[in-house]
Amino acid sequence: MSVLTFERKQDGELWSEAELHTLLASLDAALGSEDGRGWETGMTEKGDPQFYLLGSLPDQACQLCVSRIGGRYILEDGAGRLLFEHSSLPLVALHAKAAVSSRRWSVVARIVLLWCTVRHTLHDKVEPLLFESEEIFVHLAPKFAAFA
Amino acid sequence: MKRAKDQEVSGGKLRPTVVPEARQQRKEAGDWLKQRRADAGLSQVALAERLGMKYYTFISQVENGFSRVPTEAMEAWAVQLGLEPSEFAKHLLVYYEPELYRLLFGKKK
Figure 1 (cartoon, rainbow over the protein chains, first blue to last red):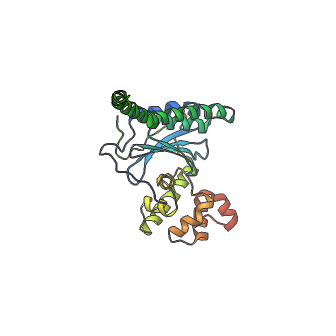
Figure 2: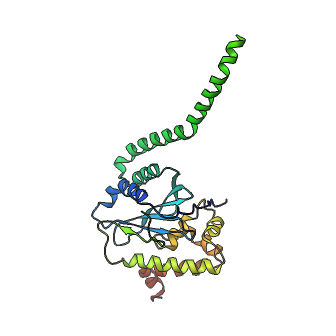
Figure 3: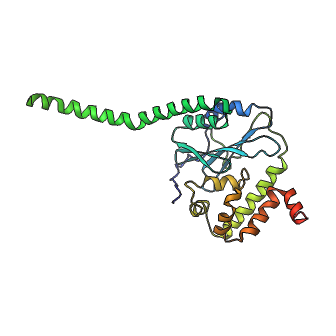
């Protein structure tokens, strides 16, 4: 298995305020609890940014980690299990939120996530194909009509 | 807004002013692992590749002191770093479970 690496953009190595806001807005409920949870950011050796959601005191171990590599966001848990990856940070943040949500809400969260993922996939993959087919149809329809 | 070059940002309304001991020790373990990786002549990407990981980000997570090397992965890490697995695990125990280390081996390293 080969590790996926990407060419980094010249000025793309740091978290932007908007990216941090997206992550913190999604994890607000987890961070607001009274058990000393917090978050930190850091960097990989190659300069790719990482966001760590820390667990409760006294251990404050990493619960979730979001990394950005070449415009793709990687969501892992504290044991290094890959939970989700996508180019859309809001979608990754939604998965992060679901991962730290209570069990009671997990079914609802999973349904919402499934819906969002299907929508993104449709938007990214299917819509261009439909658009392309439509263009071909518009282009060929007059020719078929001429034969008919 | 862009963060400073080394971007060590932290947050959380309830973040304690003192870094908990467990976190400090994980960081020391991370520094030790980083040095062992450098001794083995491996980059984070190369080590992740050898460990069969899709991304190398977990290596950084561990070296930055936010996570531990999972127990079930210790042998593989040791082998790839050219270290004796039992010694590797024993050394990490000093940082990860100092009290357990003291009980097992009778002293703090």
